[in-house]
Image (cartoon, rainbow, N blue to C red; front, side, top):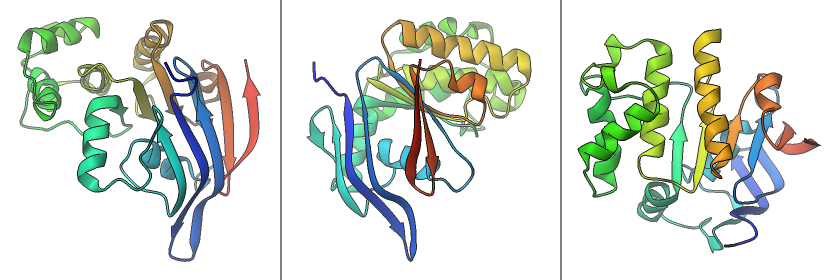
Length: 221
């Protein structure tokens, strides 16, 4: 096992004349939970998009499991996401005409393996086996987010990346979803979670605070 599961070296990401990340250095150990916080416009989303291989840096190196993926093309980045990364978004991004189970099976489809029993087992894990045949419009916000967590877990990724996963939830569902992340952390999953909520941030092993595309503070627990 590599000492670091991912490492960013001198990452810069520019959008025209705007620099979203500036000479950015960042690393994460396997099994670590890192919370990312900062005001709007600080670079959190840009950082997460690069980590998720949804975007590429303007310059610098991104080592994922020892492989420099910074210059990978779109097809190569798709493979990396499929093989190594589970994504949980604030906006659920569920396919509206597919059931909860089918949304999870779709993630398996892109992994070229379809196993309905395994998909149902993940739904059981998030307590939604009784909602397997329901469409997203028939699920509450908390249930939809739990389907998203199940979808992120189905291919057993090495890293879970979450963007404000409780941002649209009420207090009860926030607690339910947060418990899943705590359980995943205890099971040794690597978690990188963007949040505006200090209480959620403190659930991690450390918080990094961003401002104007740079890390301005690190807090360890």
